[in-house]
Length: 430
Length: 163
Ligand code: FES
Ligand SMILES: [Fe+2]
Image (cartoon, chains in turn green, cyan):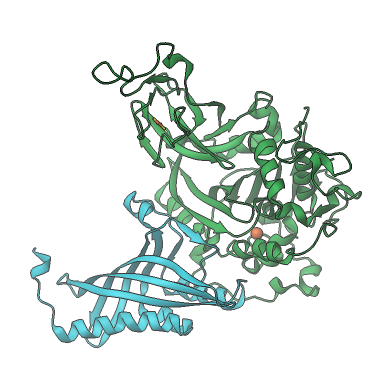
C-alpha cells in the first residue's frame, strides 16, 4: 500500500525514510537500530501507520460481550475504543470519543447499556454509534438550542471495522486490511481454531506494567532463543527445552509477520549442549516439592504440548501444557507497556482439568515461574540502549539471516526477524 | 451466630497478632526460608485481585496448595528466577479476628507493601488485604488459608517475593 509521510514528522529529503533522522542498516532485519525503542517521533508514527494502519488489532474476548448491550472498552495503541454487541447481535467497534467535545463516552471498563450516553452533555448514541439525541436540543423555554441546520444524522462515534475469530474480537481503522484469515494466514488460523475449538470461559486475568517500549515485548515473545536460557524453571522441570522436538512456523500469509513456536514434550532427548554449555539454566536440577504444579494431560492428538503464537503486532496466544492464555499488550507511552494476561478454560472442563489449569497458571503471568523474568529483561534492554546514539544496532543472526520456518529447531531468531520485516514494511523504513 | 459477639481470649489474640507481624517481618528481613513454616502442611496461599475475587475467578496471580509449593516458590526465587534486587516493607493495619469456634480464627488485615529497588527507587508496590484462616492448637499457630487480595489488577514489573 502507499504510505504517506506523517505531517508531524515532516518528510525532508536527505533524511531517512519518513523524514526520520536514521537509516535502517544495510544488513536488513538482522539489525535493529536501538533508536526505534526510545524515539518519540517514531512512536507517533507507529500510532498512525501500525495502530491506525492496515492491521487487525485484538480488542477483547468475545465472552466479554454475551448479551445485547454488553460493552467493553479497549485500546488500539493510544486510541480509546468501545466494543459493543447491538440488538441484531453484531459486534460494533468505535472510537470512545464523543462527537461533541471529545469526552470518553464509556468510562467504565465493561458494562451493559441500552444506549451509549456521554456524561458531559448527554449526547446519546445507539449501539452502532449513531447519534440519537442530545440534551436541550431545542434550548430551554424557547431560547438557546442547536441551529436549524443541525441534524443528529451528521454525527456519530467514529466507527472501526471489527471481526470475530476464534473467540476474539479484532478491530482495524483501515479499509485496506484484508479479512482476518488472509491477514493471519491459514496455518495460524488452523491453530487458533484448534485452541478455541470449544466454548471457552474466563478463569482469571491481571495485567503487568513493564517499563519498556512495546516492541521489546513483541520481540521477546518471538524470541525462542531466550526462552529456555533466561527462564531456568522451564529446563529444570523439562517443560520446554530446545532439545525437544519443536520448531518455528512462520505464517503462510502474504506477510511473514506472525508465527507459531511449538514443542512436543514426549520427545525429549537430553542434548549434549545442555550438559556441556555454560548454561545457567541447566545448573538447577532440584525436584519440585509440590509436583502437582506441572501435572498435565495431553489435550490434543498432535503431540504439541507447548505453543506460543505471536500475531502481529501485539497479540500472543499461549498454550503451555494445559494453560491457555491470551496475552495482549498495548503501548502506554514510548517506554511503558501494559501486558494483559487472560486465562481461559473450556466450559466442559472436568474438575480435575480445571484444577490443573489453575495450578499451571503459576507458570506464567506477572508472578509466573517461567515468565516473570520478562517483566524486567525488556526493561534492561530499554535501559541498556539509552544513550546509544544513532548508529548502534541489535545483532540478530541466530538461525541465519532470513525469515523462513525452522522445523526442528528453535535456536533461532527467525520469528523476531519476521516481526521486523513487517514493521519496516508498514512503517516505510525500507 | 453473631460473630462480633464472640469473645476471644486476649492472650490468644495477642499471640495471633504477634504471629502475623512475625510473618511480615520474616519477609521484610529476607528470611524467606522461614515463610513456608507459617503455614499448615495443606495450606492454601492465593494472591489475586479485588476484581477477580469479586467475580469468583479461580486464577489470580499466584496459587500454592500445600507447603511443598510454598517451598518451591522460595527455591525458585533463590536459584532459578532472575530479577532486579529489591526489598519489601510491610505496613499492616489492625487485624480483625473472629473466632469461628472450631479451632479456626478468621482474620482480616489490610496492608501496604512498599518495594525498594537497588537504585533507591521505591513505591507502594502492593496494597490490599489478607483474608486468613488461622489454626490455633495449644502453643502452635499456623495459617491454613491466606488469600491475598490486591486492590489493583495491575502489577508493576513483576511479583516474585511473596506478600
Ligand atoms: S462531550 Fe460528550 S456530550 Fe459533550
Ligand atoms: Fe520470556
